[in-house]
Amino acid sequence: MQSTRQQLQSLAARVLEDAPADEAVVLAWPLACGSAVAERTQATVFQNGTLLVRVPDRDWQSQLEDFSPQYKAKLSQLTGIDVERIRFEVQRRA
Image (cartoon, rainbow, N blue to C red; front, side):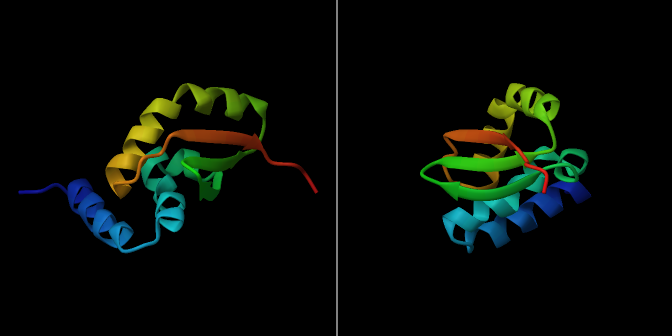
């Protein structure tokens, strides 16, 4: 029997496969990084193999860059799209 987590990932994969590539990777970000990171970050655009993610400060930027290989692998697994790079950008304050 599939766990609830597996069922949700399977459902997400089906939804994401129908989305355009640029939207699918952005939509998959919260699933790849988890809710704690998703609450503090924002994936904004996927273009030319690179996902742009806004982060609150340089500490977050540095820490998330260390996890970039795992996030890229998870995004590719969820979407079937090759994510070559994740660029973490500190969000500018208004």
